[in-house]
Amino acid sequence: MSRSLQVVQAGPALSVQDLGRPGSLSEGLSRGGAMDRLALYEGSALLEQGPGCAALEMAAMGGRFRARGDLRIALTGAPMRAAIDGVRVAWNASHALPDGSELEIGAAEAGVYGYLHLGGGIATDPLMGSRSAHLTAGIGGMIAAGTDLALGADGGGSVDRMLDVASRCGGGVLRVVAGPQTHRFAPETIERFTETAFRRDARGNRQGVRLDHEGAGFAPDGARSILSDVVVPGDIQVTGDGSPYVLMAECQTTGGYPRIGTVLPCDLPLVAQAAPGDLLRFRFVSAEDGLATERAARKALSDLPAKVRARLRDPADLGDLLGHQLISGVTAGRHEEEGP
Amino acid sequence: MTHPSEFPLIAPAGIDGLVVRFSDALSEPANRAALAFRAAVEREGWDGVEESATALTSVYLRFDPAAVVPAAVAERLRLLLAAQDWYAAALPEGRRRWRVPTLFGGDAGPQLETAAAQAGLDRDTAIATLTERPLRVQTIGFAPGQPYLGELPQAWDIPRQTDLTPRVPEGAVTVAIRQIVLFAISSPTGWWHVGQTKLRLFRPEAEVPFLLRPGDEVQFDPVDAERFARLGDDPQGGAVSEMIR
Image (cartoon, rainbow over all chains, first blue to last red; front, side, top):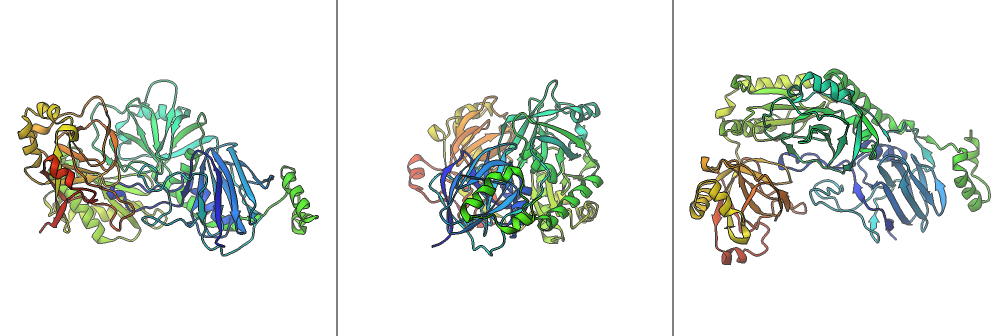
């Protein structure tokens, strides 16, 4: 029997995502891929596989899934309430999902995008070099109940591993570098922009996230129209009503709205995981500092596998612990040894 | 205030990108410069440069910030810019000229009369001026494979609608500001819907997913409803192409 993950019940916005398909900007297709790219790296580290493996992106809500074959899974990104055969399991961790067992993933407790990773990765047919659904471009689509997701060969590896992840849900400060149109905004406008606490608007999707604020808008000086330019994820457009709009994975490739700056790629997961109502602020950094920060973040990505460790049990895992006892009669020895 | 002498200019675009801008207004030489310069950048194949793309009058470069320093890329760009007059450069090779069967007016182009009136043209002259010569794919954007074509005669310098058309179909021929946009997807738009093609500009499942490339030329070939209907389901919508020599 080939291994697969059966989608028994699907939340409203499940899609297969990997790192996207860069290289078609000149033909009008944005890179797409996971909204929270860091979550993909974390899942790959937990399952000891490459970051290119496709995972299931779950916006706001998961679903119910059944294992066909003995599977390994990892859960990353926005923490959601998850249980295997009724037993609560930890987020930012890897687990065994034995043949026939059922995984239930509920609503996000914080943040927006949760990720379900599978050992061997989801093995749907790639299109233009990627398995990512690009909903805006009409590539692939939402995953519906009844779908049987084929999986790649799992090289095997351990489960019950975890990663200590600093929360990136709930908003925060976004580091921004100046771009080709920043100078079109008056210094006072820029200053006010960096002093404003923005609220993540309910209008947000894989194309971009609109931000709300009290008070006047952030229009550039003069009414001069701006000729369309290439735009990329992270660019902060100031739209007609003076509100900032941060472009995300499935953004258009050209745009004529003035851009006040660009969020560092390593801070985009913060934007992705800001839920409606969460507060975001912007802080300009110099090009040098921005570059150094981004380089450090990329280095940290490659260091992730070394940060994975055996999972410690804590009282929050009590249900899980009991589950192990019910199944095996005794808790596995190594968990006890690693207990707090 | 436009100072032509400030162009071409190089500006940072995020931590991993640079933009080379040839003008802040659309003109044939500036569009030519962008197309030719991007082709030159692609030919150079600099280490660490991962992707390039053109907008109407600019070239965007994305590089690996862990592999190269932006200043080093900018310096290479400066040297390449200085190598020749890009505004008078030859257009890249490998461009194609397409002839695309198009049905104008009626249900296929419900705003033809209104748009023609704005351009001060009667219906037949409007169609003639939209079809009499090939138009260049000045850039591709907004949606995958969606071309901005130009430049149309001065009469077609008409504004976009203030209200949006709720939806034009895939393959719609729309006009404003001396350009034609050929829609790759069904979309709301402020552009005037004057005709219809059966082109499928983006086919992700195909070996060559994008029909048109920046720099290609497109000439619309007016056909009657009967012939249009016979074009059937050919994904190229009856369009034929030849290499531009």
